[in-house]
Length: 73
Ligand SMILES: [Zn+2]
Image (cartoon, rainbow, N blue to C red):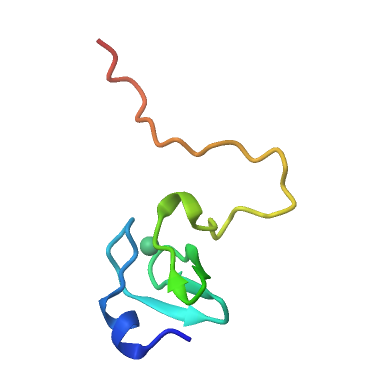
């Protein structure tokens, strides 16, 4: 169980927004990413987060690397 005090200081590492607990997940209010809770400790890592749009069954999901177009030297 995550205490309110802990939730209050937690923030999404991506957008720095508040998070809330949803069953065994920490959910970002802004981007909707879901962070796992392991052994009662929230894992606030982007790599560990479930993308809100990323369907688990979608095996062909590609990396959404945010590379801006152009900008070549
Ligand atoms: Zn977020």
